[in-house]
Length: 278
Image 1 (cartoon, one colour):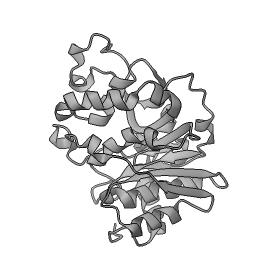
Image 2 (image 1 turned 135 degrees about the vertical axis):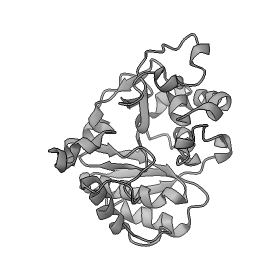
Image 3 (image 1 turned 135 degrees about the horizontal axis):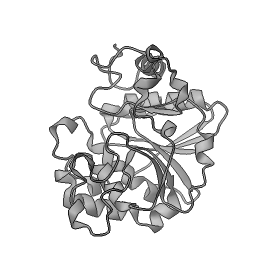
Image 4 (image 1 turned 60 degrees about the vertical axis):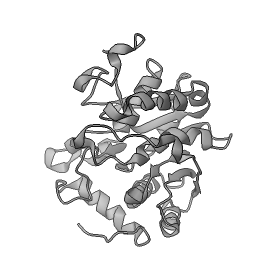
């Protein structure tokens, strides 16, 4: 199974948590990581990430031209926590070797709870990517709409809108559909006025040409899985703690998601440039 994460040094420790949860939930599976780390990620962090991937995993650090994504982070002050590294995911498919056909992208604020094998066996039907419909921004027109919506005649304002935190990518089809090129062209026009720039761009680029995945593959409402509400985290396969308050921050609610994060954070140990604290 081929996976990718993209991050700068501020998110390297959190990328290690993602990889640790994947290793625990997929014992015995051969994993190949194609990581894109910004220039500020030191060699010590790269070594730690390689170790935390597990005994059946290989880790390669891809080189991409980050100058292509020297773009605005958007205009919404509530989204100031977003890292410019969010754009790096757009550059991954072109940097991969030819033998990578299906790729799973994971945000650095996700955690894996179950086997990923069923996801890699999904029939994608010839579309370039699969994603989970965003439970908060459900349509292109929601929350004021993606920038430029009214000016693009081919866009259906009522079309479903997916969250870009977990993406199942058909690499050859992504390239054939020029998803990177179309996304970057959209961002050059609209990144400065977008709330979720990379997400808006991808929804624009694959409009009407993506596979809707079940919510369990990108559970953005995983607070419902907390035992205090009568649930359990393993009812989902990938949980996603999207939003400005993260499990590693003091304001995040106590509970199973926070405990899971810190359980795996401790496994990464040193080499990631920050002190462990709760």
